Length: 276
Ligand code: URA
Image (cartoon, rainbow, N blue to C red; front, side):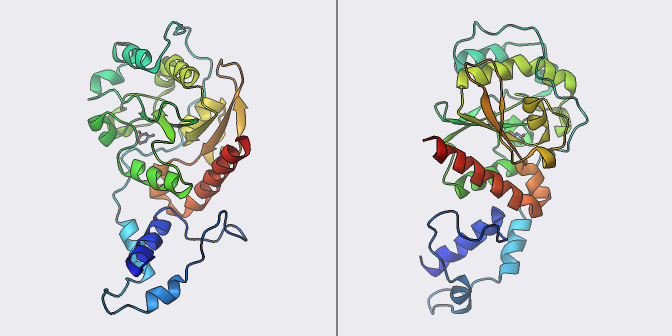
């Protein structure tokens, strides 16, 4: 690695929250890098590296999340409506069914249906809360500031959007990015459950309190729920492991919590390697 690459690597590590020592040894065969030496000894051809505090400011300047994921007071619902969607046999059909579903008022105020992104064959399914402004505009989940952080988080454990599948508990943006109501999540639960069934993931990572509470049928806050894999029955042959974790939008507002998120990502990585 040359000096510029090391600077980029450092900025990236800070951006993903790797700014504290968590484990006694590195989790993988990472080559130890003498960053301090590199930062103190500019080569004649390159500009001096900015101090770490400046890199932190660069990260802090990133735009704030558009979809605050404040924990809602809602009761988690996993039984939901009686709507039978078992006749839907593919993700495309499910997307079509949602596109023609007029029972939810959110559709009227949203610009686009935000169904999913990533690899439909992936074994990891990430489920967030609801589209924000950018997602509503583009029609894909996690494309705004929170999504950019999510990409960096995935990258930290060697994943990207080709190795995961991403959707939300709601496919339409709640006006003003407010937290989804119980009625909305209840109404759309059959669609999410069918989504999980058709996707049949090896593991679900629930991003944020709304998603974790809904999927785990819990009322406890995400800071208590996170980091522990729990198996849940979604009507598949076998229960599906669910790993609750922090929402990237929350991490943008509370960067100090990124270390917890990184621990969860390492757990996801460990789970995937254990199961191979
Ligand atoms: N927050 C979410 O929960 N989902 C998105 O798609 C974007 C922001």
